[in-house]
Amino acid sequence: MSKFEILCVTMHQNDFSKIEKMNIHSDVVFANQADTTSFEQIEFEGHTAKMITTATRGVGVNRNFSLAYASADICLFADDDVTYVDNMEEIVLDEFEKNPKADIMIFHFETDDLKRPQQSYPKTKRRKKWQKLPWGGFRIAFRLSAVKKANLNFTTLFGGGCVFPSGEDSMFLKDAVKAGLKIYVSSKTIGQVSFVESTWFTGHDEKYFYGVGAFYQCARKKTKGIRFLYTILRTRGKGSLSSKEKLKWLKYGALGYKKMLSYDQFVKENAEISKE
Image 1: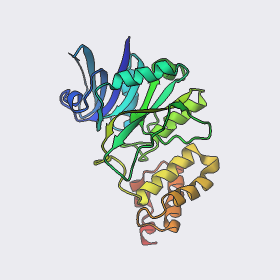
Image 2: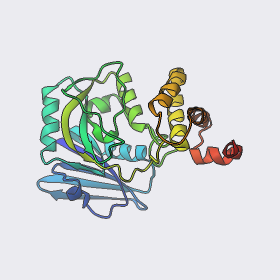
Image 3: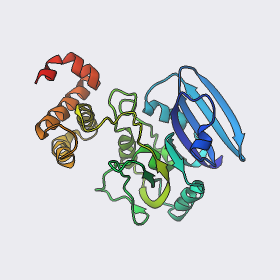
């Protein structure tokens, strides 16, 4: 069993060139969604890289494949649009060593998108009970034994390529909290992430609010009303929709979740809403 391993989701890869592009210097598992099914393994710099290729779709499905092949004490989820600092593995392992009670550690990334900055923290500390869970999967490192013991997996309903466009990372962390795992936020920066080509975010449009509404109906059903209002306030001045239109699409998303309809399916089955 290795000490550290990256679990990276990607698509349509024919080789291991992502190792160099992402500046990887550790063991890595690539969960690759393409049109075939295969398994490859190579050695590089004294490390092992595995490529599990399947014809499946959905980021949750793909993350679950990477998790199934994980074999290290400490693992880090990854997207293929991140670039790591040279000593990333050392930084991650050092943080877990200094914080032995941490089951999950959230790390910081720089970004090229000023509209989607990644929140940083002045010092490493345990997450507060009232603190939100807004962190993307690529920021999540964890002790594999703790995640396995809690039987954690990613939802296959939310995320890129799924019925609803986002929220799988927050649900994973929500399930972790419910299972009693301890989440820490780290002050350390371990790389840079690019949001130039998002697989799901097209702006604060109808589809965005539909997805948020579906997420709250699933994950925060009892408090969805106040969360709808908070979402509207938080996105004031973002996008072209009015507050009334945002609320409408949040409610549509909640209804869509009950019926298990994607945004496109919902619009198709309710053609009259385009005339409102």
